[in-house]
Amino acid sequence: MWGNLPAVLPAARLLVLLCVSLLSAASACAQVKPPKIDPILNEREDAYLNRQAEAFLNQAQQTLAQFPPQHPEPRERFLALLLLDAVLHDVHAAARPPVQKFFHARIESALKEMETTRGEDGARIWKLYNMGFIVRTKTATIAFDLVRGDSARNREFALPADFMNRFADQCDALFISHRHGDHVDEGVAQRFLDQGKPVVAPPQVWAGKPIHGSLTHLKREAHTEQKLPIQKGKRELKVVIFPGHQMEKTENNVSLVITPERLSFAHLGDQINEAPFLADYPWIDEVARRHHVDVLLPPCWTNEILRIAKGFHPELILPGHENELGHPIDDRVPFWGDSEFLQLTYPELKRSTYRVIVMTWGESIRYQAPAK
Ligand SMILES: [Zn+2]
Image (tube, rainbow, N blue to C red; front, side):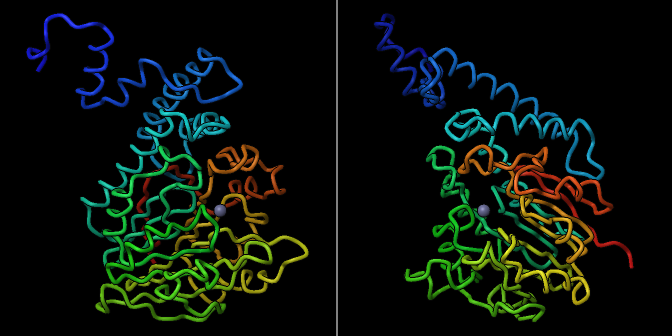
């Protein structure tokens, strides 16, 4: 490979040649002179934070692989998640190359896992970015709030379109909770629609845009089971769309999706109930009396999360929305559970008898319904 290079080249030209000819051209060039990311630091300080991020993320990665999602949570795993909190609470985390590399690698490994495995008994649940989850049973694969991460406002951080297309290709339906940018991705939704796969969303999502007419608007009605055909009508899901809210003004679909094998998954989007707007508690408090819920997927930061858990009374709880990098750092809710933020009851939930398993980007877990 190197034999074709002229024997003598000016150093600068050689560097350029190396940079453009190596497969890893971008990273090789970046190593020569990394762009400064944090304007308040000098170049040496800024470069140190990149090296620290890489070292911490590598250690976290190894520990998470050794201690995969499980209940109770091993101490080592908890510490690895705290290490992620430390790196991801750098104001400029989304712009740091080691963070981008870590995020993409983790999501790509989830994608490969999904592409090379079929449905198992029970369900496999992948956690992706923010409130993005994909649930696969033997007969159906369902996506919730699947996004590339544009909300982090960094083009290099966001996942490539090819990844998102491949995820969509693996799924039968997409459920979007509400209109906010960290939960919607028009390119992803269009990919589902192009393949004749339903995209279920509340009416506010993309209101006034051409795509709106292609979305499926199920009735937002507590406890009513509706049918949603998938796989071009070969199978159907049963769905309850609870008429939730993120505060008063934003419609937030709380979707309870029941697969053909009667496994049920409740995704809460950004459901939050805060005085004086408490209109959703009458149905929240009633869910378990009317439906069996296998897995609850709540935002980790919602207040009174323990009350919500009691309302749904699920077999397993997998919180989401930690470390949304588009948020200011005090609102980038950490894995350690910052209970001062919104007066959360998250620590009480984690101490409760509910099975709560905290996962990070790209991890998956197998769920099996308890024997009756
Ligand atoms: Zn959100």
